[in-house]
Length: 472
Image: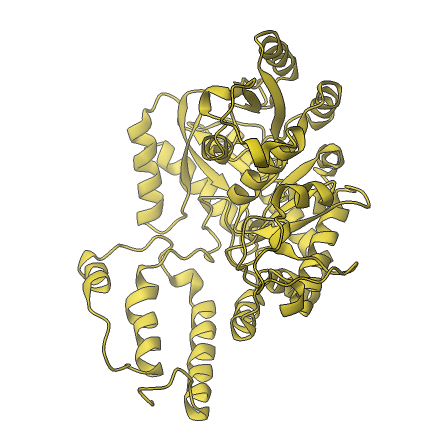
């Protein structure tokens, strides 16, 4: 290897390709025999942290040896069929190759002139996602790092829409405080965005939920009225389509009716649940997302794109542009308007943007939309199967309606430590990786079936082992 060059020669590229193919094939074939949650060997991890980088390069062979010997053994096996800990599934099969091609092309998806093909691919992906919810002819969106970023950008757009002088005046003047409303089951990204944007946590109203963990619209209406009477300015409601703990879907239609009546921006956090619209069973509960002003969803969840790939959809792209476009005063950012192409730097906070759309586009083209419809339906069926097992098992209690794929499981009479020990036991023996949860104040364990590799046999094995451990 030439020590002064950052380019691999032909022989080195060939060898790197061989080693990559060997690695991906070996990893795929060894998934079920790998530990789901590896033992974190502190000596190896400390060495990885502290060893100096070499002055002379070690070459391709050494890099792949490090991956196999020192990285993979201490990496969570997300692709294991019984990794059920979070709303995170394994990558689809084409994702790694699309990521490699995106890295080779290294497009900066900000100005369309310097990334025209990438630009139309992102737009086609966003138009397809918007069409799933019938958001209308003015709709569209932008790919983001994930749901948290998309939600923050949506709330930013809501502020700019409700206060057109926000850009000039900010939130510093002595004006009525803006108030945002969400439920006590909402994702932490909502309050985090409110804090980062200067709304302030004191101006976030956390509305209680009902027995099905859905936002109570009557209490939402009451809170809005009380804030108006107190001289505050309600401006946005963040509903949830798939709460992260229980998978519940807020009653979108009555919330949308109230937002329309009160002239409030309606954002729906569908990072977990919105893409279940691809399946038949939850579609009726998700079609009302067409009423939303903006929607968060995550292709790196149910489209199984490699991290990162979030998305923000908006009913009116002009409002997204109004929030994020700035005059192009820098001479090196010369833009040319085009009816079919977008300068994405004017529709979000980033200037430098990677070619995230390729991995989503590649999966839809490679496998077809029908494959994703089948997988989402199967995840729902498997979660329902686990819920049925738990409901019938002695010593176990199902803590939530299995609306989507979250299944919260409690051992009645056992404390938080006992549930933590149950999780540790399942991990250590290699049965499954689940996560902790708390439902109605009770400690639980939680399985979330958002894994396209999970089978009925995996669900039955987990259910039977949970039943046996609860009986100990």
